[in-house]
Image (cartoon, rainbow, N blue to C red; front, side, top):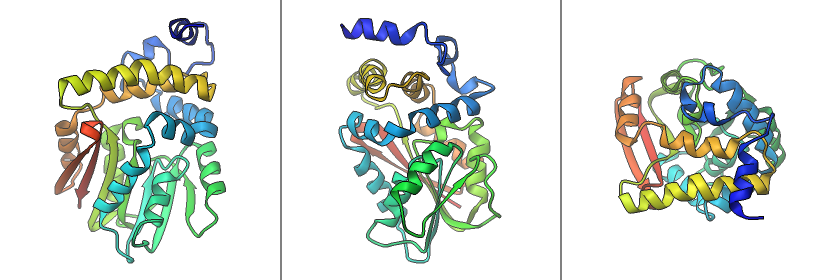
Length: 258
């Protein structure tokens, strides 16, 4: 069976799809985006880490380690990892050169958190919560992190505002997110891969029926560019924002300071 035929079969006749063509035209504008994102991540949780490894060429671990390094962790830090998924980024903070005092992982997809807890038998905590209504007091953490999650927020400014709220003065938000490479040739290659090759391969490997791997590349190309996202961070109250580009612009780390 050709890849074209596989793609056609994926694209039609699936009554379970949370993301169809009409919704994918503007995924960030869907009024029930949070519900669809939650259902999508619960469905793909069993194969989530495998897909990340396979279709990033194993680079996802290096991206997280680079973000942890940029965070300049100390032994007095308290870390909250928002939209933690199966806990890869949270564990990267715990396993870095310097171990923070406390690491908490937060996500609203229960199946993701179940797998995070199964992977980790230490003192790390896993909490089910909405990124836009974090169950913590103002100034509870010195680092708030999020890897490949902010573009899934129902309301971007609300979610970023919550991250800023729970940070102490002098704290930093460390955000790892996909971006569009500035070089036109690299951008064309990356977007062909992410919109054509990856969705077919990831759907076949995972058996996903929600449309998750069609939504994910769409959510990247329709997300604010690096300069615009920096302005969004400043708009919710961060005083200074640094960026670092990785893998020729495929991924950007944002370090936003309160």
